[in-house]
Image (tube, rainbow, N blue to C red; front, side, top):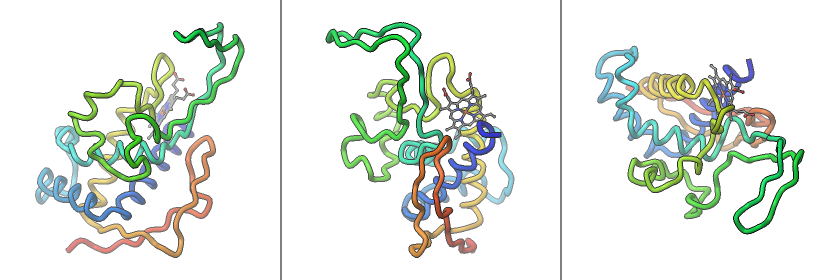
Length: 192
Ligand code: HEM
């Protein structure tokens, strides 16, 4: 339930919140989706690969609001780094998934989907962005999750404009899944 449902529920909620805060990106996604779907109100498998800008926005939302805020690992053997420093066996490490450092240093709190343009992504190490973790125990549902996020966003933006509720801004609480202690409240206006 946690891995298959709570994660995507969190991801979709924070993604909608990001879209509500950034009407310019929201509109660009809507135009992309309208261009792909036309008059259709259902999504075909082939549509998912065409949502380039929408995917960039989803990744930027996962960077700022990672549904799984971190993972822990216990070292089965000591690790020695190239500079000579080392970590002992049995140490438990916690890795945060909120990527606000290194490549995102330029105004890291700013929602900027262009960080995930193909050119920028190619310049980074594949492990610089790890919302689904990496290695042998990474997320087996990540493709499914990305598709679910795309479908949810596409069918919602096709029908509604999203606006934040300034009187009830979410308060992030990183638990096993990232939540808001007061919910995520948005206003919806029907797209005419
Ligand atoms: C946005 C949505 C999701 C995010 C951010 C996410 C993230 C993660 C992360 C970070 C891990 C590694 C946990 C660890 O190493 O301690 C993980 C593992 C896992 N995820 Fe996801 N996940 C998502 C959606 C899903 C979905 C939809 C499914 C199933 C349909 C799923 C199934 C799993 C499973 C089974 C594991 C355990 C894999 C293993 O231990 O070998 N996840 N996920």
